[in-house]
Image (tube, rainbow, N blue to C red; front, side, top):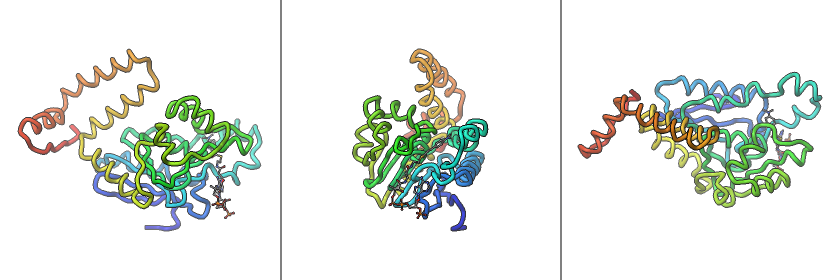
Length: 259
Ligand code: DAK
């Protein structure tokens, strides 16, 4: 393991774990860090032995946002003409396999936005979420203004984005931003357990379900329901459907093969 690397990767059975690793800067999301994260995600996405990924930071910070020192002197034309950091920020959205954000400490600005790009968020009791861009004189830039209302409704989203205040783990869970709050020192362990539970299922079913849930944000209800029905019908062409249902009837544990 190379401690100088901007991300550290490990595998735990069928789960790929990615640790953001700029601890002195509270994992501020620099361009090279986002490149490294993208490469790690795509590596696990291509790996047939991996079914689920977990992104985490360290005890103090998941990520304290985009790197302010590198944004400070940008001009409008540099940001607009250069399509400022859009290049490597959304690799997580390209993953068809489930991705879990395991948040300890700060998830601020781009850090909160990165967590929201993941499929679900699990956090420690000491986690703090915020969209503090307003304090820097800018709006959110990586989905904060769009994903917070979808996650927690307009009133909470406006509160968070317009004041820049921090939301603690309990409020984040009450608001629907996070799925589970766990003891601070158990975040990675619990996220790996959640990921391993998913990873035992059919990879085909996992990717199909992820695609369908994400469609709920993109399509009218009738279209989403039709997509779900077609996906459900198509599942009867897979060996994993036969295995899953046979195992139930035979009272044994199924072995899914992703076929
Ligand atoms: N950028 C750069 N360095 C950061 C940083 C950041 N976001 N956050 C912390 N650091 C650095 C600090 O400068 C300090 O460095 P040294 O002074 O030691 O060299 C070190 O990390 C430790 O931080 P502190 O000394 O401040 O530690 P404290 O415990 O006192 O405070 C804090 C922790 C998290 C409350 C504080 O560091 C803080 O407020 N940080 C800034 C949080 C913030 O405003 N984040 C939002 C940034 S704006 C886009 C994609 C993304 C974005 C935009 C567009 N596109 C795809 C187009 C995202 C924008 C943002 O995230």
